[in-house]
Length: 496
Picture 1 (tube, rainbow, N blue to C red):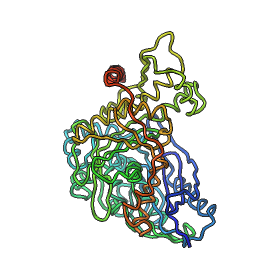
Picture 2 (picture 1 turned 45 degrees about the horizontal axis):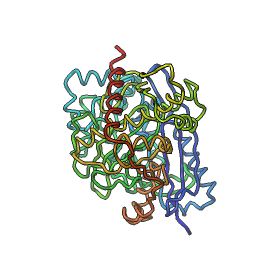
Picture 3 (picture 1 turned 180 degrees about the horizontal axis):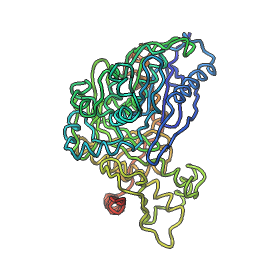
């Protein structure tokens, strides 16, 4: 019987399941959104039980729609929103509090205090990260400190903690495995990415008992099997990897210097730096890219908070478009933005600025500015932010990047990808399959069970859709980028 890989993508707003065949063709897809909770300004939560049930249901539905037998599933792979954290009761499996989402800013004061007390360099050297509410460690501390009785139960070994991959594996396996992979562990701000262990100094600093944390494993290996009473079938769970690292692998960026940018709600740029971590001088993140066959690869990462979300803003808040496609149509009506520059710092600026107090701004407006110019400026802004990060990466790694691989929903915009190539002065390559995140999880699960034999075999099924080549001359590129930097300065430190 033909075999398949079942891959799960547990995102920030939806759960998805896809069955892939050996040619990485999608046999069946199921997807469903789940509830977002905003109990206070800046707070973001998920109901971890609802999130799991949503993921379980789409997984079962995909298998049912495909009309295959459970024994045809060679393995199950998982990719997940990173940094989001859950704490649950070891015996009952019930969460002690809602999952605190990566976007949540409630722990900003904890991170600020770490900076004020002089721990930034220590945290950076150990974890590759900057002290920030973005990462999981401060969220775990908040739950331990603020949910009555939980700290005492945690110290007594009654509580488990984990990122979303850990939660899903524990639930899908019926509680047989409490594990995570190197990529997710590296996003917690309590994991030593050099010694590959939970760091005792940082655990003590945040007052987190080590006994609640999962075992850290390769991104591609058989952790356990699904529980038949939970899932309806028993198959190996054979990969777990953070979403952006999954996209890096799904893009075939297996070698040092190979780089991808994912254009989703935000934009995430990752460069594979090989087996050596590179400390950034430009406030980029040093993170683990992959654990495979006992070897660790590292990456430099830059995070743009508002990428494709700026297009949703034009649709939902300004009402000047009704769809993302209409944004492209309007932008294509004009040769350029006519001097309009939009800085979408709605929630501050990510790498390389890390300015939580920046706010969005539009400059360069004249009486002749219209919605086509604003749409064009919105698309340009996404590309400018990626350039900000790529320039830092090239400087940090001392590596030229001849090709940037792109993926994610917003990369289907031809006009934006052409401008991205123009403003970078670099080729931009878009694959036929732009859903590289879930594909990366499938590849890694397949490798773990011999469904695919090697990375070379994977590269043979990776296909190019379109390559964009730069057409802009250097002087125009420099002038446009200089104006972007000026506009960026006007958005910074706006909130007091």
